[in-house]
Image: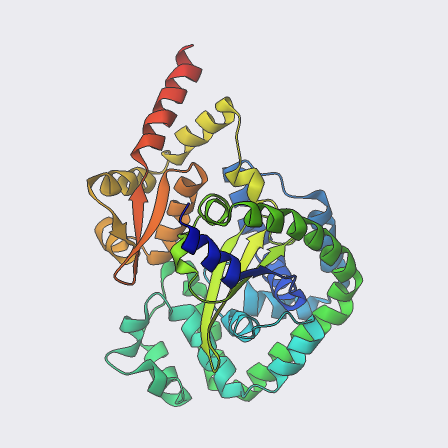
Length: 368
């Protein structure tokens, strides 16, 4: 192991439960529960029974009006932040863990114009050039009239196309949007989250101790195998929030702040179930299912030629960057991909030895 890399990881990475992040994830997962159920079925993951009870309780406790508001701001696609991006930007650009109430109070101090402009970034972040049409984001984001004009003329990526109408509504009424946003957060906190927060925190913190011990015993392996990322990326401070509600997740948010670059990782409590050892037959089933979608086979064959970065893959296969991430995650699950950074770009690299082993295992299971 590269000792200096190990020292860097131990210095820069810490683990801390962030109630504010768990609160935001709760609202997004509740709004997109059907999407997550479909993904769990595809990955052969059993969703925790307690999480199902939490969501069932939430549906009973929220009024029809607030349920509609939840769907308006959170429904569009859990795997592609859209109108909920300002929440992640606010929580993950703050270096310390916060309670949900502390964070809501901080968000309430944010200007309405900033909240709405971050919604635009959330919807268009993987299609920003098409939106800006040569304008500078740092300039345009301060001019909501210009943003409304640009967004009116630009369709978002297919994953979040349903967010287009709500986004235009928010841009046209920023002050009203902020009031609705804050009211929804406070109502969800008061009616739902406050009754569950202690139980969720206890479960998450118990898992945090287990994952932190694994990380400290071998930081580089932990980042590569369980976080599925390149250890060299962590050359700045980052905190892992182990999330019960998220179940399986490896989301990485990093933002430039007054004190420098900081990052938060939303790390699923059951990541070791997905990325840990899998029985031969089950792994074979998943290997065959991985290529039931032609785009995943196309992705693998593309990477067989040489490593590619995300935008290259999206262009070559005629899919969106968000779709690249979705299909790549399936291959990560089977340990078929690595990520390497070259000249500030992240390249997907095919693990040919793993591919050979999986092909041999499939032959053994099916013919032996």
